[in-house]
Image (cartoon, rainbow over all chains, first blue to last red; front, side, top):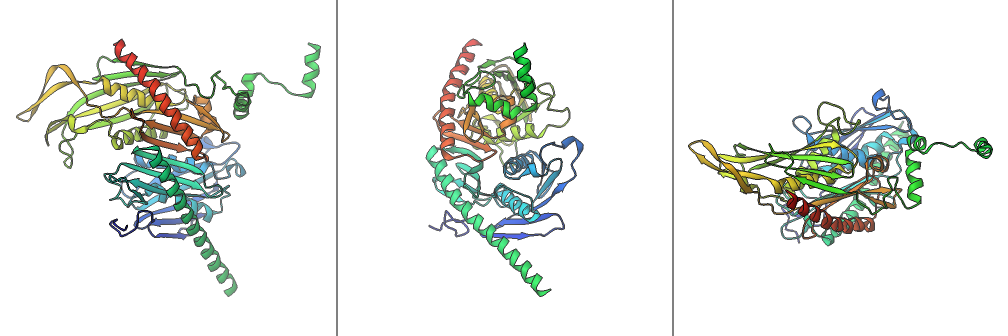
Length: 226
Length: 284
């Protein structure tokens, strides 16, 4: 089974590491899949520019910064993806006429960068205490030339493939929030990827839960020491 | 008259237009509950689509696409350039979408809006990963000169579902491209006057977009108003063999069954677009 370059099986995600409250912002978190790492900070609800003000809900502003250079169309697309995915889960109606700013900085890109950015944003929003209806987790997969589905591909595995898929699911109903599938694929392949990523998203939710529990336990330990 | 005045005392009534402006979502919901959309279409009805080929005589290939009131024009200009060092025998195809203030008051003059950039990026990914044309056929002399096709897509009127219009415009304009025969001689590229060479198009993908309202009503080919209210969009791109090329979904949650419905509707739509383009080809 294990004939991937890093000795993983086809349906294994890379080791996940999550850390929270790294920056002195309202909320921040970093999320990594192996060598892919995204740092995300959340500010808000804060004052909003008059031009962007919405009377009935908070304005969600997303900024994606690439590792090197200035943001291009790819980063704009990632901003659009993040905003549309999180607009549907953040309870923006609770904070009308304010702004919630999400800044996502790519630290290392070794494939599945959108998925890592979505997961990092979920963690940072939780860290900032922004009210949400649900939490989101995302996973990517590719179908290679031999029609094998590789979960959580590295940058190397994303080259010369038949199709690339990224799915984001919510936790409560594990239904699809965001999907981007590119390449050439059949219905069956698509829904196989869907199922595989849905299961993998469940594992990410467990990791998220673990990270939050750890953080709270540390905090409680600190409180009792005092 | 007297009766109406009595009614006014108990409930406030508005003109439909006023209601639409102050409560757009509720306005749309009232229609949807009656199984109809504000413009009179049923849920499964695509707007009238027309394609005009060769509408810009100065371009090497062009087309104009209208889906209802949404109008986009695509012009393809071929230029000669040096190839990328890593890919010495491949040309370039550069799509660019322009959403200028003329098409809708929501766009401001200046650098391209986020939506325009997202559209350009998605078209670029579609062309690249689904391999719509073989870039090797754009090579004039390996490592020296290749064709660069600049595909500029301008939205003239924005009334929703611009991505579908852009895809149809781009693919039909690519079919319409006629390049001159080019030779590479002593560091110079010479081209014949006559333009006769067509591009070898491997795949002709067309897209179908859907909006989801209240998580259960699937509206095909949403117009600008439906698009701005629902915010949940699904786009499915299929090719001539029925294979999927792209699925893009944003907004709130949706089930696999709903996705399957979108896919099958996209396949039905594909047949319609093919016949529209065949007609347009005959009309030149």
